[in-house]
Every structure is written in C-alpha cells, then in structure tokens.
Image 1 (cartoon, helix red, strand yellow):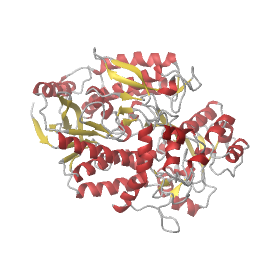
Image 2 (cartoon, helix red, strand yellow):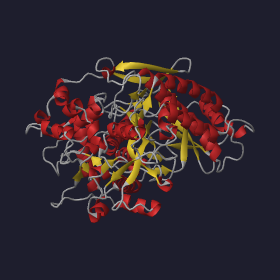
Image 3 (cartoon, helix red, strand yellow):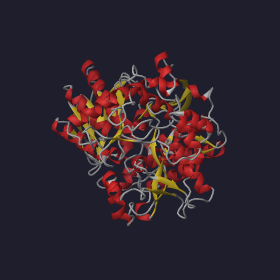
Image 4 (spheres, helix red, strand yellow):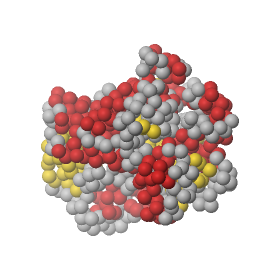
Length: 606
C-alpha cells in the first residue's frame, strides 16, 4: 500500500482552540508545525462555547482574583481536580485573554471601555469575558488568523488512525485523507492531541459527528493513562422542542443574563433543590445562603447558576416527577427582560431559534432539557508541561483530564484550552528541540495500514452505522445521568460484545467518499472511551459531581475523595482499571481551598 511521508517537528491533532493555540506556540518557537484536523479548519466545538471565557480580570467586580477563581474551580470539581492545573489555569487565564485581545479579538465592553464580564454557574463573581453569545466563534476566528499568518501547515479533513513509538517515545502518526482515502505517514518529534470529547458515545448529545474520542483512544493505545473517565457532563439546557432545533445547546449565558427555569406549573423550581448544607458550603456569604433557602428572588447569584450537574439533576427530577413539559423538558424564560437587551446580549440565541424554530425568545420561553455535552475525563497529563505518560505525547483541551475534576464550571473550558494549549505547544517545542527524530517501525506501519483497510475488503459483515447506533443506545440507557451497578454491569457485557462485532465491520467499495469506512474506524475509538467510562463508573461507588450512582447516592468524603480512577492497557490487551491517590495539596493551596471567602479576598490575596 502506498502512502505519502510528511516530516515535522511538532504535529498537532485537532484544530479547535487548544490545537490552534498549541500550534501557534510551537511555530512561534521556531518548530516546523503541522495541524491535522478531521473536519474543516474552524469547525470545532470551541465555537459552541457561547457564554464566555472565565478569567479573573476584575473588570466588573474588584473582589475577584485568581485565588477565588482557583477555589471556585476546585469546589466545582468536588476537589478531585489536579490542584496545580487549577492553580496555573486561574493564574494564567487573564493574560491569555489579554493576549487574544492583542491579537485582534473583539470583546464586549463595560461603559469604561474594559472587557465586560458576566455571571456564570459556579463562579463567585462576574468572570466570563464575552462577545455577546458568540465568544467561542471569536476565539476561533482570532486563533485561525494568527495561525494561518504564522505559516502553520494545515491538513484538513484527515483522520489519524495510529500513533507510533520508537524506544518508548513518540515518533509518528498515520492518517488518511477522508475524501480520497489516501494515507499519509507523519514523522515527527512530538505530537499534541487536541481532539476534543467523546459525545458521540451517546444518543442524545450536543457534540458533532467528529467527536468520537479519537485522541483518547490513540493515546490509550500508545500506552497513555486515561483518568476520571466516569465524569461525563450533561449540560442542563439543550432544546427539546421543536424538532428542528432538538439537541441544540442553549448557552448558560441565557441564565447568566437572567434566564429563569420554570416547570409546567409555572414554578421557579431551582430554589427547592438547595439544601441547608449545600447553601452553607456553596454560597458566598451567610446572607446569600439565607436568601437561597427562603426563595428570595433578589439573591445576588440566582439558583439557576448553580453548577451544571446540580441544575441538570434538578431538571431531570422535575420531569420525572411529572412537572415537565409535554415534550420532556422544562421552560427557560428570558422573555421577562427588555427585548433590546436580549437581542444585544444573546444575538445568536435570538436569531438561531427565530430562524430555525420560529421561537422568539424575547416573547416566549424555550423548552430545554439535559444533553451529553462535555467530558471531564481524558488523558492524564503533567500539570506543568501537558505531557501524557508517553514521552513526546502531549494533550490539551477536552481530551486531557485533571483541571476540572468531577465537574467543569461553565467558561472554564475556553480558558483551559488557552492556558494548556499554550503550555502544550511550548513544551512540545522544547521536547522537539532536545530530541532527535526517530523512524516509525515499517512493520508496525504496515500492520496499521492493513487494519485500517480491513473493512473495505469485507464483502459481508457488521453494518458500522447500525453498530454505532447500538453503542449509543447502550450508553444512553445504561451509562447516562443516573447509574447503578446492575445496569453498568450490563453495559460492560454489551460493550465487550460490540468490540468483537466491530472487528467484523464491513464497508466494501472504494475508499473515496466512503462514509461507512469512516464510521467503521470511528467505532474502534468510540469503544475505548465507552468501556473506560463504564468501567470507571462501576468502580467509583459514590455520587460526586457529574457522576451519580443511584445505589450510592452520597458523596464518600473518605475513600473516594482522595483518589482518581485510571484506565490502562493490560498485559493481555484487556483494559485495566485501578485507583491512584490524588497529589497532595501544599499548605498554601489548602488554605485557599478550605478557608472562608473573606480570607481568600483579602487585600494581600488580590
């Protein structure tokens, strides 16, 4: 089989915010850099992050600072976060946002001309720098312009199928051009994985077709650890009606600008899901906790802006108790605000639903419900360098684990990809500077080519589209928002069966424009993430953040507060699932995490 060879210092797989930022940094440090992206340049889930980028700029509330942001992130992650990643993220996010501004990003402004910031779920103060509800789009536009003008080579509509190592470290990647089916072998010194999430494991998801866990599977098969795979975030608000917009995300910015959640009886139900203990641990002040518990609509931070896991579970419970809409959701209402305000602050939401669904959000509520949206788990990385447990292999963005712990706060994904995309590119360039290129083993390349071509050579076999749909149904039904031992056990068995059947996928015909072939290869990656999610969820016998066990409804503050769940390839090829203690918190970090908010926001801390 013929293949073309390309040689670079650094290869970045994925062209969302994390991939672009990594490529920009590696290229700026003088390394010959390539981006491989599965779809068109610019078609990335970064664009879906509409509400804003979280950074303690202190432009709207001077009480904010990186220490408060750090503490909010740790709280939101139920303290399973890698503390050092959370610290670096909070410290460096403001400069990454200002850097975007210097590169041409146009943010909304305060009356004094500073970058404006809005409230968001789980954040103590208005912290999200935004561009209406098109923040992710503006970030991608800015990074694309910077990257293209920097001379980075871009290979669009290419899919990576295998990573290669030589003497234990990364040395190359095999990919194919989706249009023609032609193969390319990339020889390189370092690889940055920035492929996003695993949403296509599920039937109901906000994720696009590209998000099949490619980076997670490629890294795992190369020997890297997967971590925190049990934590799958269901965004609380995606449209459930009308059918023309079903599944489309409704940004948290709607609630940040005053959107109210009501059930079918017209009740503003989120207040009743705040327990005294939760209010005490989560509210900024005793006064705010009191207002929450009394259902005071004048509370500074409304209950609609609790963390995403809390809001999603509350919506699910309202529907389950018969207080949902007839289409299985609840109402999200921003129409009480002035129409001009809504159109100015949420232009995409207004135009999108008006054009696609005939829903005027300035006049009527939206029908919303939870959808699988984001994955906190992924490849375990070093906090400082973003390198995985495989030398020369780096990861940033949603494909990497550690920063968000058990649950991600809204807006932290954009600052995550800026901070750790930059670090991944920086340290990949340093790695490439210090190491010589090595040759991928010819026999391994040949075996990878044969494996990728196998579905094309079968005249009879499993239908890849049907197999993917079956996997998505299994995950939706048995490994969804609420989990329990029996169903998780069934899911493990079903996934093992699907893995065997996936080896017999058939997509006969030409390599050109063969969607069945693409899907047959995607399934191999999906099954790795599906198995890791399910086995990790089965092992973690507690409820924490985005992981809820019906048979273990409480949070275990002893055993499970102190460990991450890891998945590794076993010696026999089977997936090994184990636990590892969290890195110890140093005293200064512990004081920030455990201290009162007043102690955190002293003049010295600011």
